[in-house]
Length: 235
Length: 339
Image 1 (spheres, each protein chain N blue to C red):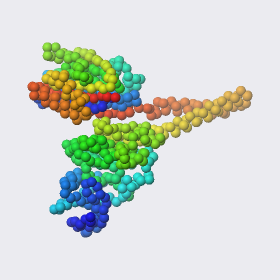
Image 2 (image 1 turned 135 degrees about the vertical axis):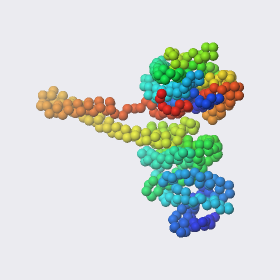
Image 3 (image 1 turned 90 degrees about the horizontal axis):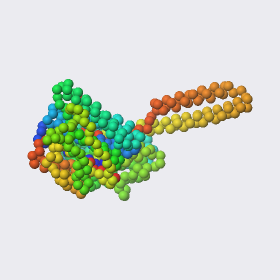
Image 4 (image 1 turned 30 degrees about the vertical axis):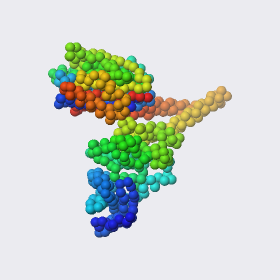
């Protein structure tokens, strides 16, 4: 079960933060289910905040309305994955249609982490990142970029199946989701060092650590939106 | 020490003493109306001014209104409405442990007042909720007193200071951490635990009773409620009294559904009688005795029970898979819902 979360949501050098973060949790008869999602509305595209916000809204609805029915018979990662992908496909179609009607490009990347008991399941598309913080920060997502350009996202072009990863945490599991704005100038070891369990014991400290990381990134020349979600899980 | 009369108010007696000053009962010499006067000296004066700043914005009838603020060279005085009634702590003596319904009704009244505070534009956190600070007026309504530790404004809600009463104060308050609306939620949880168990949290070891200490008749919903409200981590509790109120309403609704337990009992009893009568009829037929009227009644009851059962299954209350929704936080620059 996730103990607490900390969020960073900063504009950086831009006027609007096109990133969107959503955190949801429900207590069910079979345990606690948590969801953390980070969507990075694409800066090069028009109205990135609409795409990212819309995806977060729809996933929130899926989490409360559809997922409980999927989990009623017990947690099965395959069933959850199918259900979520059906939802993602519909979101992609809706966004694409909305963009085509208005001549816009509404696209967003997303990284979605689902925690069911001690199991975690990750869905990812785009250039954001997810890390597991154990003895070091271990990146568990691919970057869907080629020659510096994003090649996969949701809402534009054809539908791509998201990268999926599953796992279990034993005694503790700490996760970090970051947008590309934060990870570009910050090394993995710095991320781990700032958010290690020795340094961070509560939400306030975690938010301070994330804020400090954002300041460092800004000093190193980052002008993009910077967003991150830190989740602390233990028994 | 006998207080001097001030600005036309004649002191009649002491109402109470607290960490933030002494409260006197006074009568206005011209209007002959009774008021509560709170005196503060020295360093306490700043706290009293802060209390006045919080109280002047509050207009709910369940909160005493601020009449005047008097500043002397050596003393600050707050003149407040005097609520006649019994202190809730006194009222509860001999009444706790209460039945769950009764305890819920008291808690609901308390939470409604606190929800009003939390719903204010600047968010007001009381930070010292306990039965002593509630007065039960003659009409049975509860009134909240003593805003000495209350803070308003989102920034000020994150003050780090030691406040509250051991037993009712949340762990973050006792550790000089940040305290805000979540601390009020904890205190309300502690009050509810006290109402259900009769164990006074202000006595050693100075912590509220845990859900497992509740009497047997207390429902699982109330125990879950206590687990949530008394969670040591503030972010795991319902974030304000408004949400707590929703939880209370859910428990009350759930308890109404429990009436269906009586319904179930009646259903099963009638079913048993029906089976018994059917067996007797079969036996009578076997013995070749006339039994047509009996068959009709028995068949009718069976069909009615069957319809009742089907309707209950389809339309009746179902066990909810999702017990509670938490967090529900979204950070976005998008302004409207949908595309």
